[in-house]
Each structure stands twice: as structure tokens, then as C-alpha cells.
Amino acid sequence: MSYDGYKSLVVRTEGRIAWVTIDNPPVNTVDATLAGDLQAFAARMADDEDIAVIVFQSANPEFFSAHADFEWSFDPGTLEALADPDADADLNPLQQLNERLRTLPQVTIAKLRGYARAGGAELAMSADMRFAAADRTWMSQPESLMGIFPGGGGTQYLNRLVGRARALEIVLGAELLGTSVAERYGWINRAVPDEHLDAFVDALARRIAGLPRGVAAAAKEALDAAEASGPVPRLAEEAAAHAKVYPSPDDIVHRLRVLMDRGGQTRDGELALERLLESIPWAHRS
Image (tube, rainbow, N blue to C red; front, top):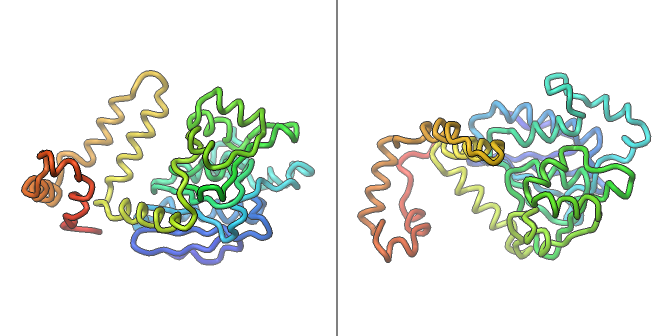
């Protein structure tokens, strides 16, 4: 599937991974151009079974994405013009966009450098995971200082990531947070030294993309069911998702037998289980 023709995105695909680089000078504002490109990208990607992982990154090391276009405050009609006719009509266009991205079947990773504020932070939160350059990434939801609050899905995403009390602090305090606080709060998965960030995200994306087809999507489905369930776990949904990958096919059973032969379920083997597993090649990678 072709991913050419965007004005504010550069998309490169390789080995079941799509690297999506935001390039919307000067500060990667979520404007009509970027929102339109992301919407079109998500619509194509939703049907692309050859891609397992999507990495969102920025061409500008100073800004992942500054915020939504201020012009939409001056002329709300320009935002409403971006409404997606195929999405939930009860949502505003930014919510529709972020939900399109959040609900993609692929595993999505936001690789953050520079500032991610307001609509830019909401865009990052629509991804499944966020990894940031330590001490070179800053995040905030400053909308309260503009007389509004995060309305592109931000309150809902933020509350699930950091909890209600910290979400209120972020939304109402409107403070710029560095990676040490963002990591401690759970706004990002991990702060990684800047010089190691690219390699770290690349390795994670390749590990996920190398899993047998369907495993990552089924795991994501099961975890989403737990998140949506509130205080009562939705075990039926987890069981249905797990049934998609277990009982295991023959090639996976063989791999587990090799694991046992190499020390699985012994003390020495279990102390280095991840490395042990990584040493055993997949029988079939599609």
C-alpha cells in the first residue's frame, strides 16, 4: 500500500514497521494540513495487514507538535470543516482524529523530542506507548490558560495514564513538565537518553513486528478490554482475545520445546529468560 502524497508527513515502511515523521514547519502545529494528512493516513493504515507497528516521530528536534492551530479559536468553523463523516458525530474533529489513531489495529509508539503541548500532547497520548528523550522533551496541557481545557480527548487519555489527581494538576496547573516528572507520573513510558532513543524505539518496534502475525493485535485487544471495564475486569473479552493465540500453532510449540531444552523453567534459564527467548529464532516470520 502506498503512503505517498502527504504534505506534512513522511512515511517510510520496512519489515512490518511504518515510521511516520511529522514535518509541518515551523513547529508541527496540528492544523488543517496535518490533521487532514493524519486522518488520511489512519484510514489507509486501518486496512493494512502488512504493518504491525507504527512509530510517530518529528522531523523537528525542538517540537514533536506544539499544539492545535490557534486559528481554530478565532474561527471555529475552520475546525468543524474537518469533521470526519465516517466517525462518531458526537465527537469534535480532533477527538475523531485522535480516536482514529488510538484505535488503529497496529501497535503505535510516539517517539518524543522537544515540546508536546496541548493538541500535540493529545496526539502523543493517542499512541499506545510514549518514549521521550530524557531532559530534551517537555509536555504540558496549557489550555486552561486559554480559557478552555483539553478537548481533543486529552482529559480522557490523561486520566487513564496518570490518574485523576495528577490529571487535574496537569490540566489546571498548566505547568510544563520535563521527562523526570512525566515519567514518574506515567505520562510517558520511559525517558531514554537522547543519544539512545532512536535505537531503543527501533529495537522495540522490531521485536513487536517480529512476533507471529496476530499476537500483538490480540494482546492489545485484551488489554483494551481491561482498561474499558472500570473496576470489574472483563475476563470474557480477555478469554476471547487469548483464544486467538492459544492453543498455540505447531511452530510456537516447537519454539517452546527448544526453550525448555535450553534451560526454560530452570533457575539459570529464568534469570535470563528474555535473552534466552531472543536467542531462539521464529520458525516462521510473515
